[in-house]
Amino acid sequence: MAGPNDGGPGGALRRDRFAFGALAEGEALVEPILGSWEANVDHALARSPIDVCSSRGEDAVVLGNLGVVRVLKVNAGSREVRVREGELCLLLPFGRLDRFGYAELAYAYDAPDTIGLLAERSKMDVRLLLPIPTDTRYSLPQWATYGRYFTAWDNWRKAYGCWRTQVPDDDPANHLVFGWGGGVAFAELMLAKRAGFRVAMTAGSDERLAFLREHGITPVDRRRFPDLSLPTRQQRADRDRHRRRRESVENFLGVVEELGDGHGVAIFVDNIGEPLYDVTLGALAREGVVTTCGWKAGMRLSHLRGAECISRHIHVNTHVWRIQDSPVIRDFQEAEGWMAPEGSDVIYDFDRVPELADDYANGRIGSYFPMYRVNPL
Image 1 (tube, helix red, strand yellow):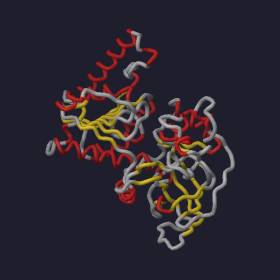
Image 2 (cartoon, rainbow, N blue to C red; image 1 turned 90 degrees about the vertical axis):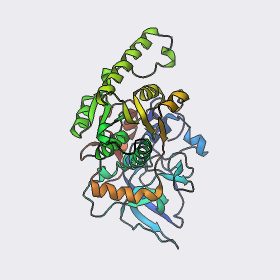
Image 3 (cartoon, one colour; image 1 turned 90 degrees about the horizontal axis):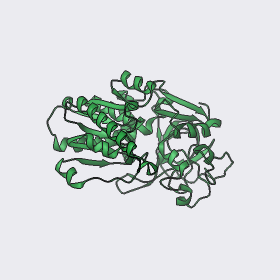
Image 4 (tube, rainbow, N blue to C red; image 1 turned 30 degrees about the vertical axis):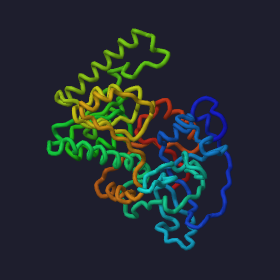
């Protein structure tokens, strides 16, 4: 990514040559194979909520911090390394860590001097490379979706743990977990389903509704509530727009009440943000948890603190996951089959990455797992 954005997100991308120095001790030269297109790439191209070039103090940034790479060369030096040349690995998106192993800055996003996967060759610290099991039962595209799954694993554990502090012994089958649409929410709801909860999720296309139904998630057609989002700044004086929103909200909450047996949502996965936040809170049960690990459409939120206290709502906010948990999550995926369903991805060739950027930003991708191919396997 370089220079000013001249229109759509794809216009912020520029194909160019770049140079990086020799491998330092503990670094590996890698060949990216598949990259997962994530919301953080979309945010970077939109230069919102931050301009990552300005934040990093760099004129151009190579994006892409989640995907599969092949290790070409390792400069171990005096370090003991866990990766070998020729091995296929997952890139862990940690730029700077806090003292407990959580990310403060994200690799190939706001962490300076980090080189992402949107390049035919890259180099990175070997500590960020997690080998894929050599005898894995799953395809490379399935593994390339790990970013959404690792994030969901961490967020779900925190949200479920918080819910259990207030509802310690009731059967999850009596409770509803709901999510606004997205790949992380899908992965999280599959964990909720494993835990015994009833699960439901919105989707805005026939393809996605069928996908949810196929995997045991009750689909809720978002198109039934066309004015559910908050009016934009330009629409605030439009009384009819507000009336239509009230109707959409009332209809949506009616569906939630039915799905939740009149009690609302026990755990609501909301990675959207401001446009739907008041609806999320309105749908939440007493002792409910609203949990988020993203901010797709608005970071600034407000609520009535007294009402949230009286309802004993818990608000959970997480980001990425803990680096030392990475092998544990990988092994759980392999052992339990908690993976993106085979064939549920869509892959763009490297030359079509600008098209992928525009399609993602404009909601033209049916899959929850879009990705790009840089080099052949």
